[in-house]
Amino acid sequence: MEGRRRTIELDEDVADALERRAAERGVSLDVHVVDLASLEVVELDPADLADLDARSAEWRRTGEGAPLEEVVEWMRSWGGTAELPAPRVRRLWKRSFLRARS
Image (cartoon, rainbow, N blue to C red):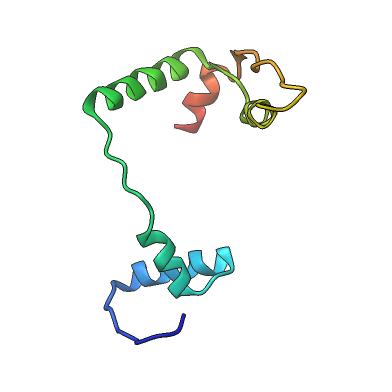
């Protein structure tokens, strides 16, 4: 980016993380920081957070859901001539799997 230059001091770990992520994205550090600054911060209502907690607990309890790949494929079909049915909800993992990962 062209223009006036400024120096901003950052913690070394923060600077390293920003540079690493910019490199992963294949953009300059300037572009990466501007992109981050333009992100909209969304504040969640406490009731929404409680709902998310309850849904997460239910998922951990049952292991039921739809695979992400199927959900993405379904959503991409929306509005087309061959819209797909919603993915079938089913058990995706066993409780022992979650315990082993904790």
